[in-house]
Length: 300
Image (cartoon, rainbow, N blue to C red; front, side):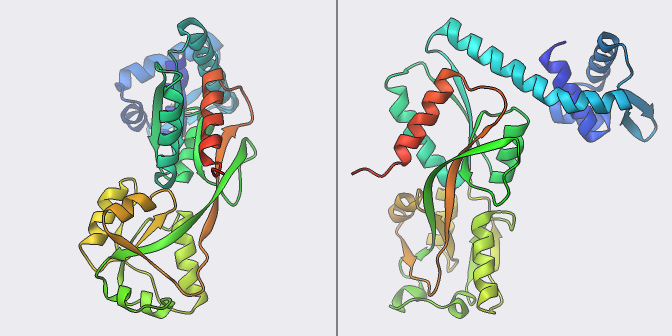
C-alpha cells in the first residue's frame, strides 16, 4: 500500500465522482481506477459500488475511510522523521498560517534559519477553517491562527498572544479630521474591504454593527487579506475602510494608512498554534514551534 493510493482513495471517497477526484489530485481517471483496484486487491474486499451516479462506498469502504486519513498521517510523520535523521539539518517543516499572522511565522523562520541554514519551509497561507481541515488531513503539521470557538477533538492548541484588529483608512480620509472616536453610524456611511463572513475578524465587525443597530458594514470588496499590501493599496487610494491586524500594522503605516479610534470597539482574538493530538512532530518541527512561541513573547 502506498501513500498515493491512499490519497487517491480519499479523493474518490470525498467527491464520489472519478472526474472530480482526478481534477482534485491532478491525475487521470484511469490512474485513479487502477489505484482503487490495487487497494481492493490488496485488501481483498470491494471498497466502492460503481453506478451511473458515481462511486458509492461499500461498508468495507466506509470502515477503511475512517482509518485511511490517520494511516496517511502516520506514514508521512514517519517519512519526515526518517528524512530528518538521514539528512541531518536538511528537513522540511509543513506549516499553515492565516494572513494576519504570516509576519510572525516569517520572523520565526528568519530566526531559526540562522542556526539551521538548510531548513526548508512549506508554508500554506489560508483562512483558519481551511487550515484546520489541512491539519486534520495531514497536509500540514502546524497551523498558526485565531483560536476557533469550537476546537475539534483531534486538535490541541498552544496559546500565543492576544491580537487586536483596527480600522484603517487613508491619511486624508474625511474620517481622519473628525478628531474624536468614530461611531458605528458614521462607519456605516463608507464602503469597506473585508474578508468573508466565515472569518472571525469579519464576524466581530458584523456583530459591532448589529449591537449598535446600524446597517452595515457596506462591503464593496471582499478579500481574504492574503495579500495585505494589495488590500492596503486599495484603502490608501479610495474612501474604503479596511481592517488591520497587530502583525500587519507596520505594513499599513508604510503605505500611509491611519488607524481610526472607533467608539465602544474592542476587537481582539486569541492567536494559537494548533497541532494534531495523534502522531508526533519531527524534532525540527518542534524547534520551529518553539521559535514561534519565542517570537510571540513580548520583549522585556
